Amino acid sequence: MSKAVLQAGVDIAGLSFDPVTVSEPLMWLVLAAFLGSVAVAQYDKRLARPVGTVGWVLFAAYWLVLAPHFILIQKSVVEGLGSVIAVPLSLYTGYLLWHGRESLLVLTRAIGVMGVIYVPFLTIGPLRQTIIEVVTDQVAFLMTLVGHDPVVVDGLSYNGVEITSKQYPYENTFWFDGTDRPITYTIILACTGIGSISIFAGGILAVAAPWRRKLRVLVAAVGVIYVLNLIRNLGIALAFGLQKAQFFPETVMTLFGLSDAQLVSYYIVDRILAQFGSVIVLVALTWVLMRELPELTVIVEDLLFLVTGTEYDLGTAFDENQSEPNTATPGDD
Image 1 (tube, helix red, strand yellow):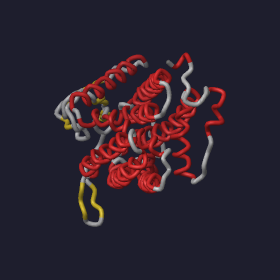
Image 2 (spheres, one colour; image 1 turned 45 degrees about the vertical axis):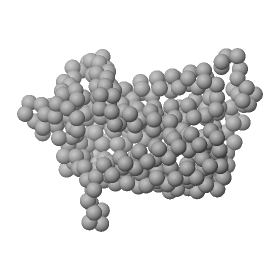
Image 3 (cartoon, helix red, strand yellow; image 1 turned 120 degrees about the vertical axis):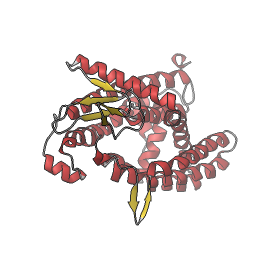
Image 4 (cartoon, helix red, strand yellow; image 1 turned 90 degrees about the horizontal axis):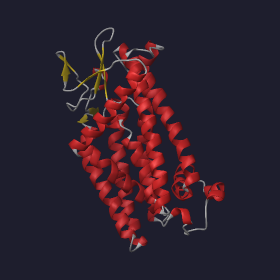
């Protein structure tokens, strides 16, 4: 969106590298290990544990490599902190799995399914372009509903001005006339909600529950996430493009190391309000989904144990919604 966030590589201890490029081969290794663990678990859970452990160690390396990208390049507090925390948590998960906590095979399966959903959008150009441009069109439509006539451009430049934050020449950039220079808000894959959708889909599809009930919950989760993501993009685009959140500009510029005052609105609305708000919404959504699909508690209980070191029994909170264990009710078939 500006030269302040265009840096691709980072320099650490004299070593210069692009975190995203380095993380790509690790991503494939992680996915292979997790899916391998899922396949082996069908026949021998004891053998699946070491395969899954390798996957979690590789997952820790993946987040370690990506952490500089979120911290130094994206300047995202939520994503940066999350990637740093993910490193020891992944190693700890691998340690517990290696030492016999087989319930973590469900979490391992969830991450594998998540990768199967997300990676194609990340690596297949036409698929990535389609979802990005569909989301862009829908956000543009929402803008017209609230009284704005957005200018949406394709290519890597417009009116002779290079859109330097843009990686692909898709029709996915909103163009605004800024006070000092034009302001552009480009919808990228991370703005489509596919990341959050794949996380929830992975968890829902990984647990042992009747398929009809899982699909019902999946459709509801995808719908809620998708709609809320469109609203999030609408708010960020208008607040940034129209400079509606220029609060405490000097403080924000110092905090995020910005040199362009026009970016203040973007960092306030996206990096602070939207990202922290998304965490709250996704936690609330998880709680609601567990009421409809109590089998999800096995994943949440393991996550809580990893973070707090305390065992939780969330299943008792949803007893009224749960039928006999492993028994499908007539409405679930």
